[in-house]
Length: 238
Ligand code: FPP
Image 1 (tube, helix red, strand yellow):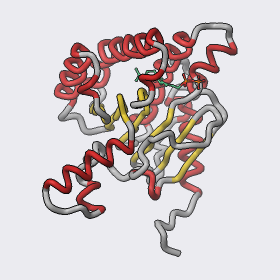
Image 2 (cartoon, protein in one colour):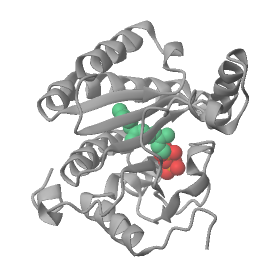
Image 3 (spheres, rainbow, N blue to C red):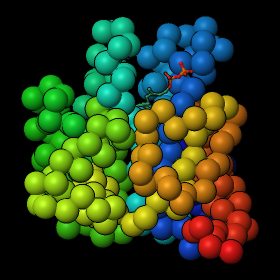
Image 4 (cartoon, rainbow, N blue to C red):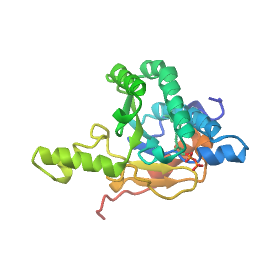
């Protein structure tokens, strides 16, 4: 992380009432293409951004940061790209787990991660267990995640317990132990939710930026939080 765009450069606690931010990290491929490089290069730089933004979230006092890393639709990508993404995930957990532990960051995975390769499932469960008691910030990573599927799973569990109410379904979502979602960010100029946190976004503010994910910095996160602070949230009231 460079000194010019790390969390120290933006400094202080910027969260201003924001507890939970989620990000649709988009634009790795276009970032690489602009540099005549393979998509894998964009994803690799995307992981560097994950690291920087997670550190910034921690230093800005966010309780939770949820990142869309691999959707249930991403299996349609070419096999080598999927392998690259899974390889990056392995490296990320291996290299950053000690930092999470040292910085009181809890790692959580949302989505049907059990369907990933057995060694990844094992790494994830080990990392979640070793950070379970950490309380500063939760870094939630969405893997093999689809919001409609999550809602269907939650509704089935709620039904099995006898009550299909909004509260009962919400209590069964993968995010049930996270604060309500305040702000949803999407990079790369696309204006859609792509089956991410559809339920949780009911009252979230949205922030869309043309910046491609590998170019996203702590300063952009701070800008989004500052704009959030100036918005008046009504939650359906007046
Ligand atoms: C979208 O860019 C990005 C993804 C599908 C994956 C996001 C993954 C990472 C940032 C790396 C892995 C993350 C972790 C936590 C290890 P795109 O490839 O769709 O970009 P494009 O729309 O420009 O083609």
